[in-house]
Image 1 (tube, helix red, strand yellow):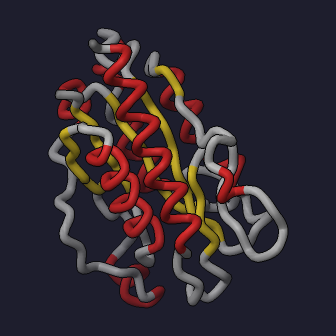
Image 2 (image 1 turned 90 degrees about the horizontal axis):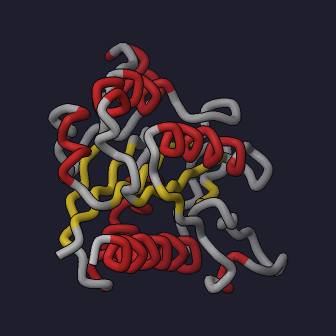
Length: 200
């Protein structure tokens, strides 16, 4: 059975919801799926002062070495000024040993994100994540246009050909909608089916 890891960081819960949806999609495609989050690195005063969400059902990932046990890794993180946030970057910065021995070469990788606005850095954040995965030798899967829910301008819509996205509004009040969650499920299914074909 294909093993998929959904690895995320979420400040306010939007990316966490998307992570759950990615996992649903991968499981629907027959994969065994684990969800892990990276550790919070912001000072406790900042976490409390900014109202970060601290209750979650998902455990913190034990170490980068865990990544080698999966066929596919889907990485989710919100934007920080158009790039991957420091919490997620700090985790990948400790994974040099995996890179050095090519432990992730050929595995499937994908990304998802959340931004405050439709033009708040979704694509550059996805690229900063995918760039990391490419450097680790991974085969990238995007949110292809087989998912029609990312098309149209009739409403606020997340989604990009580079990965699943949601839009949170500047105060975090907007939650992922049905189309955005379905985009995350679609991405999870695509990752799982691609990995199954590669490792058959």
